[in-house]
Image 1 (tube, chains in turn brown, orange):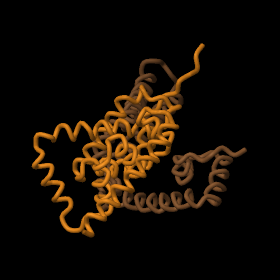
Image 2: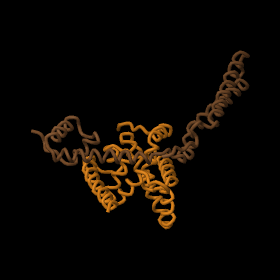
Image 3: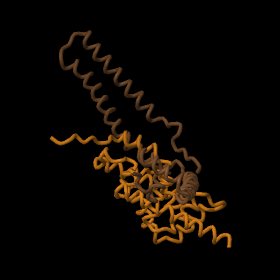
Image 4: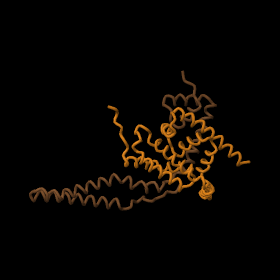
Length: 138
Length: 169
């Protein structure tokens, strides 16, 4: 036996929040009951109008990312610092520990490459992005 | 040994936030009624969320959790500007200069409802929250979301009919 339809299940059906089996039962009840059908049609129409009205308020808030970006980039800042430290250590180690020329040159080369990668990365992050400061009109 | 609780990284938080900024701004705008304050509220909520990131449980709907923060930031802003009500009213009218938009009519109709009803409808329509997210944001069971939302819709519908009737008289 099908459970009677509660009023609020009509709203849930419109929102797509009912379980598939229950949604089918509620749909069947709406088809058979003119009172429920009227309520469903009225709420559907209102729901669509309100959704459209609310979406006319959407806009991209500029301020949020301006303040957040330094904090979000904190993680990357630590990674950058760790890489830079690694590069410095790699340059010092061959001088402290006696290594043959080839090994010393290899470590120096790697350290130099590391420093260059970090410099390029930092430069890239310092450049303004194409959407920075953009505000879209509602 | 208990289950391992994964936390959100700041970059993952930023990505999640990015996908809902427009609706967050719309929700704040529907309460505060001017763009500048709405941007302030979204910014404060973004920072507050980042500070409280360790308290977030990934089993919760992120949107619901974050909109609860945004809602509190909006309330704080409304309270802080209350002594300058005349200024707020002036800004409100400045924003309405020209043609009132659809969202402003909806926001004004929501103001005429009981707070519980207007709150759930704002989160639903301006914030675009699902039932699970509404339950999280309002800290109520999903069944309560279902019934409260339905009766709030009926109340809003009556409210709008009344205001249409008043305008035509």
